[in-house]
Amino acid sequence: MNTLTQLDYVAPPMPHSAEAEAYLLGAILCGHRTAPKLLDSLREADFFLPANRFVFSAVRELRDSGRSFDTITVLDHLGPDASEHVGATIRQLVYDPLQEVQPENYVRLIREKAEMRRLIHAAQKLQDGCFSGKMSVTRLADGGIESLSEVLRASVDAQDSGITFFDAAKNVVHELDAPDVLRIRTGIARLDELTGGLKAGWLSIIASPTGYGKTLLSLQVQATACKDGLHALFASGEMSSSELLMRELATVSRVDRFHMQSKNRVTPDEVKRLIDACGNACKRCRVLDGVLSMERIRRAATQMKQAVLNLVVVDYDSLIEADGENEFEKQRNVVLGCKRLAQQLDCSVILNSQFNKAPGQRDHNDRSLDGLYGSAAKANYASLVLFIERKAKDEELPTDEEPCIIRIKKHRHGKSGPINAIFNRRTLRFSSATGATL
Figure 1 (cartoon, rainbow, N blue to C red):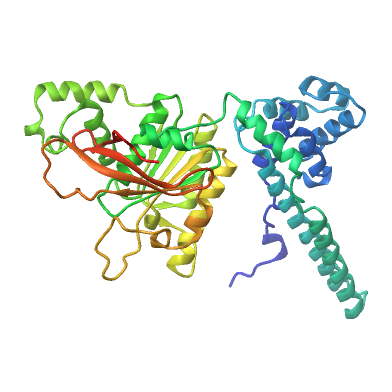
Figure 2 (cartoon, rainbow, N blue to C red):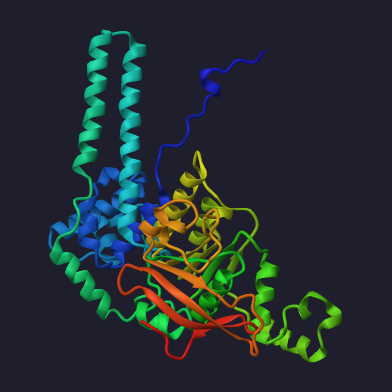
């Protein structure tokens, strides 16, 4: 029988995030507005990769001596002793594609990885002392406790102490004045007027019973954003990419989607319109279908961010796999995952949600925030919660225009209440109705 020897054992890599280190240094060298704060938030030893330590140390030295820091000044400061690897690292940092992500989030990640490494070193020191047999158990235990306590004290000292009212006020003014602040329109004029558009860092929830149009409204937001030059990842746990795009092609081409389910029903003119609509489909927005988990969505969104990503749609909550001992914990982790995604990738996230099936409740249009499926975290962490109410959903109407209500159940930055809207059963689009309320 084979036995595992010391030579057979390969230690796992030390905790670190090369992506976080590269992005953070790239943000500093590119002159990110928070660069001074970032430089004071970390130490050289917090970086794992040697080249990144060299760069961070050089930037700190330039800053402390009152000189400016950028690619040229850092390379000049390092001098001929800087290896070719460090120079290549700097050039890569400057052109890092993820520079729109909030760098403060990576500060926390880098710091956390560094603290893990310090814990490992403290544990290894204790282990070496045990194997050496040169110290008593009491002395080893006391030394181990002191080493671990030192790591804990350093961690507590480095905790984020918040932001001053003055700095927060400056950020508000900066966002109002910045021309490139993300604002994603829904295509419902009154809703967009009240919200100012969905913004980066927002988690928005669209809730309705099955078949009321939450997926259609999400597709409408994606299409509206795309026309504005903003691009999305649509994570569809319910429909395949083909099923999802069939609806959108039907809307754009004005072809009855029920005709599209059979070749014999589609006329030559409709085929031509479908081909034109297909040719105009966005080549930058993407669909992620199949079995979905928050980890898979995060990976796809992070990869897409390297080119462009402004919006993520998650359709829908109960179909997303997540950790948790019960459904409430799983839903809480889905919500937290979506919120972190919005903040870390500096994009807007829409999470489509079902309602809890309350016994005896027949009126789907009389719901409170407590009726959202799963965890109360949805109401707590969302910036915007919309309910779709369609009382005439199953009625025959003389036209394709069905009156409905888009109800703002929560708006962290403004009013809540009903908006009179129209759902066009042929185009599958929502719009504001005449005399929209609020």
